[in-house]
Length: 121
Image (cartoon, rainbow, N blue to C red):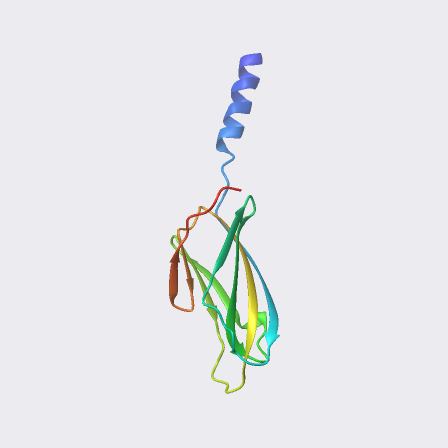
């Protein structure tokens, strides 16, 4: 009887494979009313909950996170800022938190693709 219970438990744990998921969160903070001092740097930190990306972006002054589209295409996470065409632009600090299973290898932000090599947590 112990062997049957043991085999049942092993089977249950072996069949409990994580299903695919894609979780994301974005924080947008307006830094200035113009785009001077805009940097092209993309900072990445990995932890057990995924990756965090921080960067600055020039967007319309009234931009909100409702204008951002996230999608997964194969092993790529695509982020699109639907900024429209407005003359008055402001500098924003963007913080993206992305957690997926299975792991992604590329991040595309408005057409610019980055190879993702996670650092150890």
